[in-house]
Image (cartoon, rainbow, N blue to C red; front, top):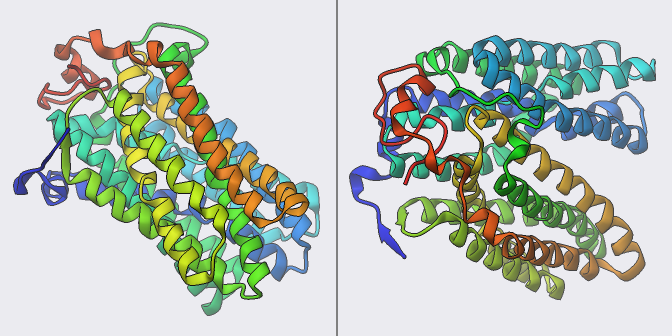
Length: 426
């Protein structure tokens, strides 16, 4: 059940809250190097005379290092606070990319070491922002709407980021673009950690456990589902390239990806403009079902105009799924592990996306472009099956018994306690 959000409770209300616009903008800017990293590496390698195979190898190393680093850095943030982890990590990541830009690909071990350094120390700004929203916004409904705004903002970043990178390359060079993009990333992280909410935030007391956030069965269930959501999205990127090749028009690929982003943007705006009743776990199952259903028509592979329209449709439920998943993570993350938990979601989604790209390639070569898109539909359906099969553990939020009186301690401020500093209370 949904109701229209009152005018004072929309996105404008979120952005008018003290520190909110700064935190959102700083986080997006800080995440820019990672968002355009694969494209920037490819352009740099090709400019240096390297092959696509080498570019793929460096991107893979960068991706694996990022996947490993995010939850580890997220745990460090929960233990040590944001400024002591986020800014040093951003600087080290930028040093890695600067090393690649300045030394080139002549010494391959050094090039691989540079991208591994950049990936391993990519700051967990995404999880960090979601940990800050309760202290900045107070009320639970505003935090939930901020999650939707976050998902929408991601689509804007993934659209504007490549355009900015392309502009920098055309003005200077791929090497200069790498340097500028990573400098912007450091400035974004600096803006976040110098803000009062980031400086004063403290994680709730946590139980010492080597598994950290992963000791939550509900979180594990969600991660299992989102692995396949990532797989679905990764397969679409490869299948879209094959579709453009089939049509003999490479530009079609850009249109399809832009259409998918537009669909996600529209879906996120509409989803965040409403207040949703009921348990988010049940709502997530419905949203993932709709996401999978909207992926299925892509196998028809009609003409470019119709295919672009189907791409818009396929993206409509992506941002709502992400926004709802953020709430579920918040409810199931064990006390003191919220940043780590969000970082695990980022990692799982990324690994699933990489596997989806790897699976879709052979599928296209063996059975055609439609089969590549079919991988997306299957991935969405498997993600739904995981949520259905684990409904019992998802129905028992880890953080639901956390006293709301801990909120001031968790955020280190006198913020309202309507929402716990880490886990929503109901």
